[in-house]
Image (tube, rainbow, N blue to C red):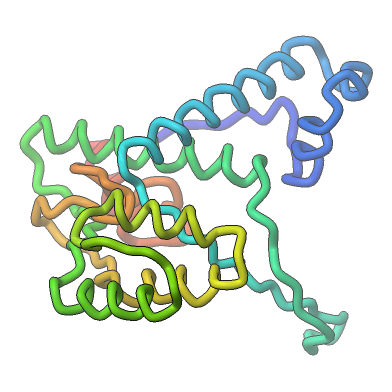
Length: 212
């Protein structure tokens, strides 16, 4: 139960423009807001580096957005770029989800978790064979850091879509449940969905638990 007072609203595009030329934005923002956005960016990039260094998997699969006309008819499609403004919000949402799940777990509550089980050995063996057939040098993909190496090695090559999509298909589906399975792809021990209570019911359940 809380209230939010919005002092300054930004679009993702505005924040990307800010990051590209911060001096230009000094005349458009108050000193406090200018400093806050800079510090938010610094913190988010630190959280991101720490998460990836700890073994979180990053699959580059661009999101496609449909363009509609005034009547609601599709007139085009385009891929959305995962810019640093998007990464800032993503890291803060991830940390909020982790913090809440950890707190509720420490209190002994049965948390409605967002769990992501590790992939089974057969699928990982199939993935290893597929990646090897593409000419990518690969060892045992039972090791998450070997998966990370393959993802990073192919990220800027024509093989990216095939390899990253194959890794995604190898993963188990993420589900909601009370068991302490953890989240394999993110490599978090405690994780729940907390940040969207107005559009996801599991998030609302977590908010109700915090409010009791």
